[in-house]
Image 1 (cartoon, rainbow, N blue to C red):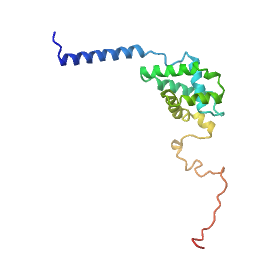
Image 2 (cartoon, one colour; image 1 turned 180 degrees about the vertical axis):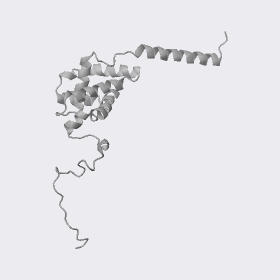
Image 3 (tube, rainbow, N blue to C red; image 1 turned 90 degrees about the vertical axis):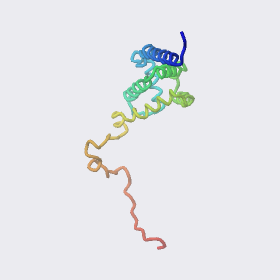
Image 4 (cartoon, rainbow, N blue to C red; image 1 turned 120 degrees about the horizontal axis):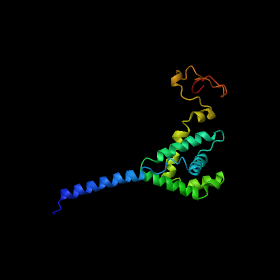
Amino acid sequence: METTKRKLLIGSATATLMASTFAKIAFAKLPLDLGGDSDAKKTLVRMIRVMFPHKKFADAPYERTADAVFKAAGKTPAEKIAFLTSLRELQESGFMKLDDKAAYANLKKIEATPFFKLVKGTTVTTLYDDPEVWAALGYEGPSFDKGGYIKRGFNDLDWLPEPRIEEYAGAGQ
């Protein structure tokens, strides 16, 4: 049987397609939802709390943020594996037993990693978009669906002192 360029290309394409299909099937069911692994979720919640500390915030917004991070981490099999590996390394480092200052120092060491960047990026856009967090911070939420800010305290600056207004006499006077 003669090997031609055409047969080689078709064979390579077929092998690649079969390998990628196998990988999707084999890795698609990796346990990244981690619903049953409460230790992993606790570790991620603690990581988020250390990164974004707010004494006023209850646990629920941090837990919802951790769920969003798990979801964001599972887009591809490679991301799932890398995320799980990094999370396991953080758990094995004794992160949960560290005080906040030592935990922060530990996170500073990994801040350049894709794992840290994923957690940070997802947390910024999820934690502060939570209505429970808005209430804790005193933010009333978006106003467009209530007619805007004009009739809802736009000029309500009772927390600032009254402005000092002086007449300007002009230059040289």
